[in-house]
Length: 171
Image 1 (tube, rainbow, N blue to C red):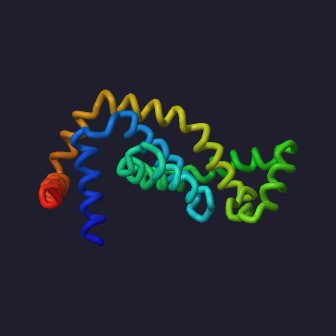
Image 2 (cartoon, rainbow, N blue to C red; image 1 turned 90 degrees about the vertical axis):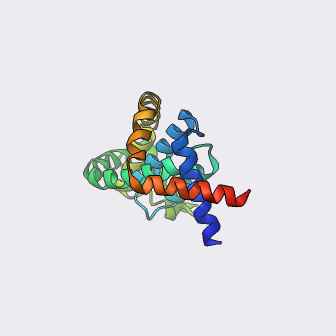
C-alpha cells in the first residue's frame, strides 16, 4: 500500500515536471494551496480548503508546495491578519451572522471569533484572484526555466527515473 501511494506521488511529480498538467491546473493548485497555507491549522477551514484542493482539477503537487510556502508567509503576516480580522469582527452588520454561525453544530470549529482566523480568511479570499493571475503568468512565461532548474537537482532526476520504472512495472 505504501509503495503504491509512493508510486502515485512520483507519477504526479513526473507529470507535473514533464508538462502533462496545463498551466491553468498548476495555477489553480498554487492558488488553493496559498489559501490553505494562509489559514491557521486548527480550524475547519483548513479541512474545507484541503477538500476543495483534492476535488478540484488543480495540481496537487503545486498545491502542496504552495501550502507549505504560504504557511510560512501566513506566520509572518499574522500581525496584519490580526488587524484585518479585528476590523472585520468589529463591523456591526456582521455580528448577527457570526452569532448564527456559532450556533451551528460545527460552527465553533470554524473559529470565526478569532481575529487571526477571520483576517486570514479575508486576506486569502481577497488574494485568490491576484494569486491565480500572477501564478498563471509566471508559470506560463517561465515554465521551461523552472523545469530546467528543477532538473538540475539530483533528487528530482532520481525521482523522475524512479517514477519511469514504476510506470513500466505497472504496465
